[in-house]
Image 1 (cartoon, helix red, strand yellow):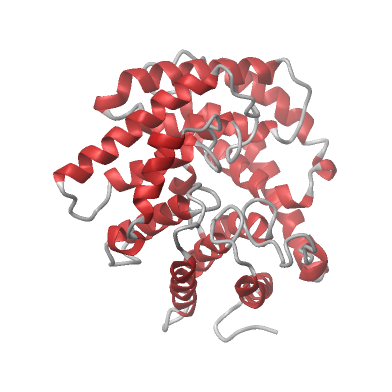
Image 2 (tube, one colour; image 1 turned 30 degrees about the vertical axis):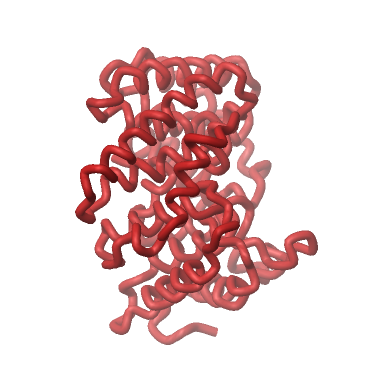
Length: 358
């Protein structure tokens, strides 16, 4: 079955499945819930004259707003700070016109308190300091007119995020692999801050330290698909002004990795195929590595085949523990669907939400 105006049965089925299951999911974050559905529908917007998908994305935004309250988590991946950054992103791209400060209300004070008062040893994007820092970086760069006191507040919060990452990094048990929950995601946040004159020096120093640690760990580890996100971030970060990393060393290491990866396509978990294809797509295009482009295409074709041949409830089953179908970027429907639709439609506007900027 296809909706009017839709030519891709896979896209149609995923869209219908998300529409059917999203309202039963109480989570608002892009990592664990409805925020990811907003991104997916937004990437499809503009397909129809009445902008059917854009309307769906907006309806989910309204639904999330109605859920935000005093006890909503402030974390970036699963809570209100990530939702605020999502609204800023959509506003910057002309999809929303409302002032984000008016929508979030007092929630922003709770986010600031989480950074200033409560503190956390988690420095990741999803649950930790790097995510809160990304939120305040979005607010600092807002297209909306800011009062000078607010701009100074956001600037202070970004600087404080860098300081806290520096203090916690040495004792952190954060995984070396993984953008969402590991050190590569922290590096993407620091890379953005390192380009700002008022926080350039401490961010660069810290970024070089973490990148060096990641690359050292990568070179002495056995092959795993989880290493791909680390390579993606290393390629992104190694050319910034002041980087201590050698591009040629990273390239040589990656060439060994991809030679092994090409023989292990069958070992990659289904839920990871979409993002693996996406990171290979960028590595190949940004660095003119044909092998990365070929493997990206092979993974994408494999993903298409699985989606066409299997019923979606079989691929994305109901979770008894969560009492819903997982839909976020953690392990849900959108973890597979969002990277796929991004490559199919060339819609990568959502990537700054996780720190990936040009």
